[in-house]
Image (cartoon, rainbow, N blue to C red; front, side):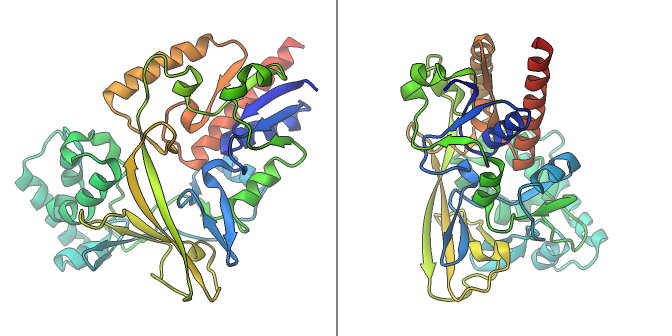
Length: 372
């Protein structure tokens, strides 16, 4: 059988693109080299708990179009991301808010907190932040930077904060209120029953082939469809001919514990440099679990090498320039659409992935309609 579209990757971008094509009457084949659908949002049930196998994924958006779209395929609960920071046994609220400032400095009013941050910013003498360290100090002051930002960030990126660009931390939420809602998005929650169920609903009625490596069988698979939607790594598609784009990777140690509650929160970040993991996720709290057991995952950030799962693009000057060269090659590929986190070498939140897939599929289907 010949298909209108071959979608490479059954993650969020691929699933949305495929669903839109099928809804428009197109024939679609979705393939994935993994043994499961849903890409990095894959959830697996363990002891009645939906475990986020590739790390915590909390859906949040201000985009009503995206929110309405995903609600066709899942019912979302009211989960609000309110992580806790653990610095050598001291617990602080994230995002940085009045609870954090009170614990750190003993201040009780927003005016006192703002004055303390301003005092530390002025003492540091930073006017134009040149790196992540200076950016963080200009936002939250020296004390919070040293305890709650520096160690965590250096573990996450494997680099000194002075070597990291300022823009990485521009989204650092700082609140002079007691609001513990990290994202502060209009719409947020976790799909009840897990993300895998949501993606399966998106792919309903679409042929999916798992354990299928596109790049190892490219010629044979390309022959099956008029057009390819590729969501894998863009440099891998071109066999790394211009060089390798860099990523950070994440390793997980997951265990089932015969207790009902390990840490009392979905996410606890360990912000000191000495603790080897960056955070511990307790999965049951994403869905307000009442199970008698619990499942936790320790996350370890690591350098990426070929064969590892790529998580975070290293968006420095070298990698940005290299990606643009690969993008030029991609634009010359006839009948191939590159999309998603790996295809566009971009750190995407889930709602942005979905918005991108909706926009690209709409443009593609409109183009096809004009050709008829």
